[in-house]
View 1: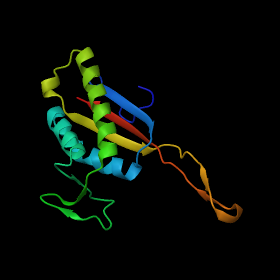
View 2 (view 1 turned 45 degrees about the vertical axis):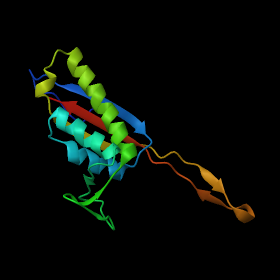
View 3 (view 1 turned 60 degrees about the horizontal axis):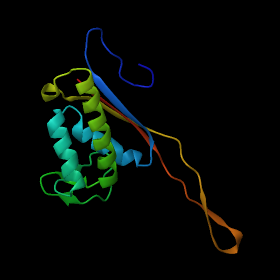
Length: 146
């Protein structure tokens, strides 16, 4: 299917969902998607809801410079904005699975991928006629349930 990194094998039933140009950090998105990749659907939803409610931290494996230790996780953070967006996309994928008559109890996160979107450029006026760049990063997210 066009626009997805995942290509179907013949005879497989999958449900997909995407988020395009979401105003969230690509680095934090990478860490959140690594945390849910390969998990059963219910467990992935629990991990994301716990991160939003500040109950359980998301482990940060790559982008963890000066990230404090969290109990039972190691370096970790609570990326609420990213977790909310990923949770919404996960719910969309689950709805797509129900529409395709897939058994939602047996689904797991097969693909959780992200890529950088375009940068929304802006500037903030400063003193003496200068301006400071005020850019907003965007991220594309893709989730496939199988």
